[in-house]
Length: 128
Image: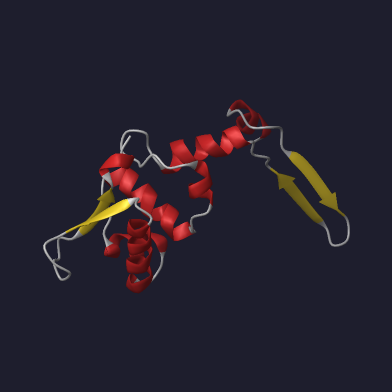
């Protein structure tokens, strides 16, 4: 595990052991470069994901990050898909997607609010 971690470019993990209660903890440090790489490579594929700052990304909720990952993978995201993938209600998914739209990251596409084919995609100016 240590070899794979360091081969991936991260700093050497640190092991901490306690006797009472018996517990071992492995600390896997991330440098700013590693966090930036993780945000850009793992969650936001370069070919489809939005180009957002690491600062903005680090302030996002887990549900917002799932939405961005889905947009990066599929080019679009729906409320139903986000709800399923993030394990949240459709109301929470709707609020999350509208929040990303308010931040200028996503744009809504559809004929009207009841259009079953409606979806969200990355704002054109943020596409890589």
